[in-house]
Amino acid sequence: MIKEYPNSEIFKCVVEEIAEGKKVQLRVKGNSMLPFIREGDCIILIPCNPSSLKIGDVVLFNHNKVVHLHRLIDKKENNLVLQGDGNINTKEIVDLQDVIAKLQQIICKKKGKKVNSDTYIWYVCFYVWHFLRPFRPYLLKLYSMFKK
Image 1 (cartoon, helix red, strand yellow):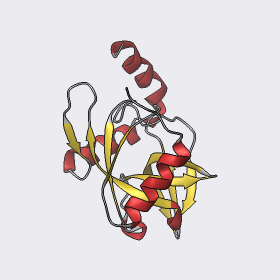
Image 2 (tube, rainbow, N blue to C red):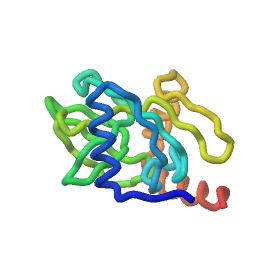
Image 3 (cartoon, one colour):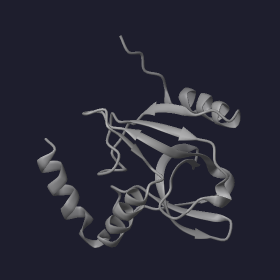
């Protein structure tokens, strides 16, 4: 039997493990990162230096006392602008110190396929998806129709 824990307990442990320099593996809840990360996928997070993050990196961060996993879409001085790939309009602006960890790898729920997040193809997919932002509502609707 799988036991579920409240996010507040889980992320307290995640922060501690990352602070000790360890990798952390979590199962994803939610669909804000569709189509690249789906509910039920596993992710591996690693410690990172927030000032060295690049546009397109996916990070775990605190925003208004809630932990999110979203993509870095812009940098402004000591602030990062983040957005879920599946979100159309919502963006978060956070300080560098709000970043907890960086995504290293996704383990897809259905096939167990491992996808590293620091590859050239990963960034190309992000830039194409970012460019298609005006069409995302339609693309996500099509995606959900075919994934049922």
